[in-house]
Amino acid sequence: MHWTAQHVLVALHAPKGNADNTARRTVAAAQQLVALKGGAFSILLLGASRAVPDDLLHTGARALYTCDGSRTGDDTGDNKDDNDNNDAAVFHPEDTPRLVACLQHALDTTGADTLLAPADAPFNELLPRVALLRQWGMVSRAAAFSHSDGRLRCHAPAHSGHLSATWQLQSPGAVLTVLAAEFGDPSSAPTTAPAPIRLLVAPPTTTEAAHRTPQYLGSDIAHTARPPLGEARIVVAAGGAIRSDEDMRLVETLADTLGAALGGTRALVDAGLMPGHLQVGQTGAIIAPDIYIAVGISGALPHLVGISAAKTIIAINTDASAPIFTRAHYGIADDFRRVLPEWLGQLRVDPQAD
Ligand SMILES: Cc1cc2nc3c(=O)[nH]c(=O)nc-3n(C[C@H](O)[C@H](O)[C@H](O)COP(=O)(O)OP(=O)(O)OC[C@H]3O[C@@H](n4cnc5c(N)ncnc54)[C@H](O)[C@@H]3O)c2cc1C
Image (cartoon, rainbow, N blue to C red; front, side, top):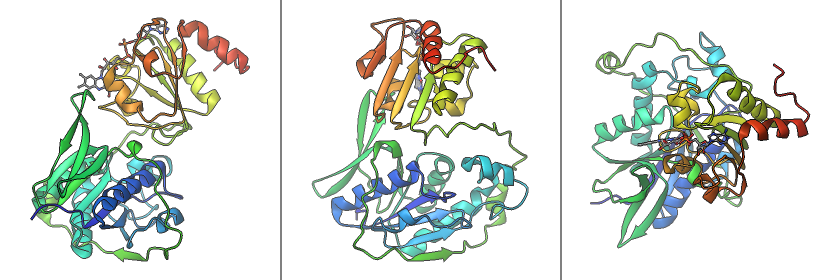
């Protein structure tokens, strides 16, 4: 018996209000998958205390499950500040046994043969464990699905984005993480009744599972007023041309003036000028902003993989033959130290002001 994706369980991080881009595009991935063979899908929201977003109720999901796997269970408790400022901080490593139990319980309850989630925290940690426990095959960072000779296939970038690998699973079930930015908005199913909402209570975890989990001692979260990288409509990204704090301040001023998120290349992360979670690219975030402004970025393929779904790319680079210009919709072949102050001047901001 091979994998047919008869019933896909879409696991999402319960959003605070409306579903975010990542959640909506992950649902779109499930819609694309089930459309290939006429299957169905349900949605599981981890972190049950939040209200269920309306926009997820009308996507054609068979049912919407909520299951609380977080350490605090709701927005009260020690890590309230973390929750208020950073969704990714709601779950901690020591939640792992509870979250795996939630996912297992939801698969048992729904009878789903496929577990699908966005390729980000905490799912990158959780899904391999579920695949192992169920002895199902797993494909990470799928960007598309297809159907051929009666078999489903997953397509995922490989080798720094130089090729797209095609996978065919041999097991009866499948565990998939998807690059949400590669999928558009989900289609709504306005004629159908809203999906019923059901609360799942995860069974208690075993002591053995808890012992295998690292003990969480705390976190150091950078508080920022900027929008999250994966959600922002505008992203200003800095590359290896940035050499100093002063350079960085110019880029940050542009980001803040435009209400944009800040991102960067691995060159900048490796140089210690940007934290790793802001890296864009194959080994960083895959994003789909409306506008991506690349400041001093060469346009190496592993970086371009992260912005292939960006609608408009604006590049500033002194080297007119830099590969970024082959992808950019608008290009400025000039020194960013000249271009950005002028640009900020047009926007009437003093780049030297704190
Ligand atoms: C397995 C693997 C995974 C990787 N994953 C990622 C990833 O996820 N994300 C990622 O970004 N990279 C990734 N890389 C690294 C990637 O290959 C490149 O090395 C990196 O993206 C280069 O970053 P950069 O363009 O900012 O820096 P550089 O290559 O140093 O380019 C700097 C650019 O700035 C221009 N410049 C210099 N001075 C100025 C100036 N004053 N004004 C304007 N322009 C100027 C230069 O002309 C040049 O084009 C990965 C590599 C490997 C092998």
